[in-house]
Image (cartoon, rainbow, N blue to C red; front, side):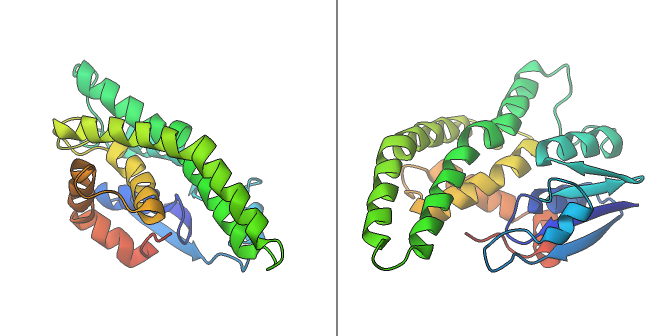
Length: 222
């Protein structure tokens, strides 16, 4: 039995969605965030890192969404419905690139934006103007231009492809979904400039497995 530990509004939603796509048998335990918007300390009893997703398999606790995705595909997707086969080099390269791009490139920018937003929210009134000024400088100097470049890459990829790895839905789309949701919530994607991304998002969220994942794990909101 697979046992997934899921924290609301977190990366672990990806794993619920993947498990539903795989029609796998699993147990789900959901956790609420603390008042400080953090994972509860109880998760450290399951894995020292104390963050989700945590997938328990045969007495082992697996962490990191990308690794868990690869593990589940290796053991539960024998016919490779959610990952391009090795003989399709172009699709495999796109799949592998976007699977890692989500966490290695764009997510750090989004986390930085979230952190500074929370800093402003938690700042005392006397300090809030200063914290807002710092947030603006970080946004302008470290986030905005890089994020625009990345979004343009994503838009271009989806201009000629139905999904990130090509014409077939894959786990790369599951990995990329969260970053698109977070970006759209943070800045509101331009409906004309990023029409392909937003149409892709609709296709993702229209999938039966995605809807079932939302029923079980809740909607991801930022």
